[in-house]
Amino acid sequence: MILIGIIVSASMSHIQLFTASNAAPGLRPSLFDPTKKEIAMKLVSSAEYSTTDWRSQYAFIKDIGDNRGYTAGIIGFTSGTGDMLELIQYYVQIKPNNNILAKYIPALEKVVGTASHDGLDPTFVADWKTAANDPLFRQAQDYKCDTDYFYPSVTQAEQDGLGALGQFIYYDAMVMHGPGNDTTSFGGIRAAAMEKAKTPAQGGNESQYLNAFLDARKAVMLADPIRVKNTSRIDTEQRVFLQQSNLDLNPPLIWRASGGNFTIP
Image 1 (cartoon, rainbow, N blue to C red):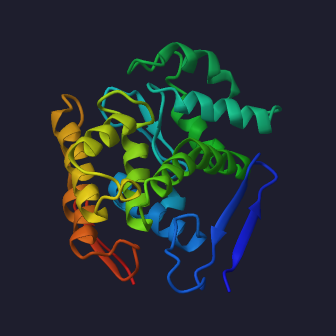
Image 2: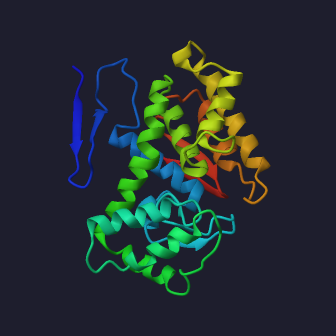
């Protein structure tokens, strides 16, 4: 029997369907399974923050020198790309009164597309860390991570016929490169991969397609003139799982990322 679960969140306008871990044999696991999603969150965090404890990153905020202003929170919302602005706007929506970050919305609107801290310094960093103690701010980060990055990437991966590893590879790329169809965004990387190999939904080989996707993504990372060219999340993490033919992303998982050694037993 196939077991289907439904998660309904009062703070979200969607219903999440997932297949339980003990679903019928032959049904491939998905990141919509909470157990698999937890693995994906740990993997992303290991590359972004050198720890699998992703829940400890709600308070993280720093200008990491990538020309995107401040990077903060569980998946690296940035002031320069606008997703930090959208996060705080949503936070104000669910907490309209006594919101410590509400006053920064005008400044965040002005710095989108730049690395500027104008209107944010000197108090924004401390106020972000204070807000991270608020369960509603943590809830807001979870929600925007899901709706802007996790759900779109995993849904696209499922449509392309990819299993849990491919879904994670898409999600990690969406987090780092952002949505969009230009050559350096997720859509552009996917398009470049599809020029080299067919997706499983198109009748292609899953491993061959994922290798093409990782090749396309690595090329974008190495060509970036600003960011540190650390491709360990591909070379010693995602490619390792792919070489092991672990297309369902089943533990145990052993990998290296950002100078650290990690294990999910």
